[in-house]
Length: 279
Image 1 (spheres, helix red, strand yellow):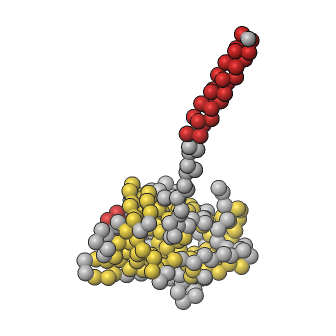
Image 2: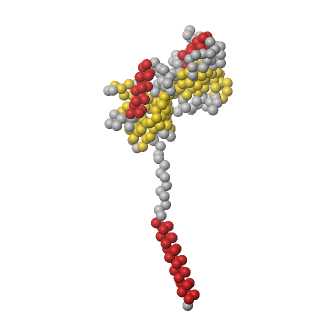
């Protein structure tokens, strides 16, 4: 009799414990999986600035500078407003836009370009909303007034293109437009992010480029130092080469040869590929 009562008690305790564990388990809801935010529809694309607002006026970018363009990817903005390289962090959700941490290189450019860059930079920071309409991206202020209007830059794939190689200058046009052989090594590289860099015979230089089909624009050019340790003749050569880069409007690649040309198709700089570009 005692054994039967103990067994019944043990079974009752086991059953009660099982019901309690089951009730506690059922009361715990599984955590909701984290919803991954969808990328903004303008991300992963290069955009060219086609207009910006100045008071009640609509202005277009100056032809003298590098075409202003921007890239938005993973919350990072990079590009140029026509003179310096800029970068910052942005947030985009629904139609809301926020930019923070805007920084820029400090290269001096002609005053009209500096004014344009200042206006575009202010608009990037003042923008509060965005919209996509007719293939254009518009950044707007809090009241919905447009500030910047951009259009996509189409990709230009090329099996033997500008990027991925180091180009050595074999000749460049002097002030009389004759191709002269440089007295020192001058080289040039293009990277997939729209930047150029190289050595001008005196100093290292850098800038950006925009390419569409066979059209190519470079500049403005920034250098590490304006003083040339190799002397005044070498400095004049470096300045002449950099000025020639600013006149480039188109290009031609034939095997390991690259020709940079002006708007009339005249050769400004002749280069030869010498090695793969470094990482």
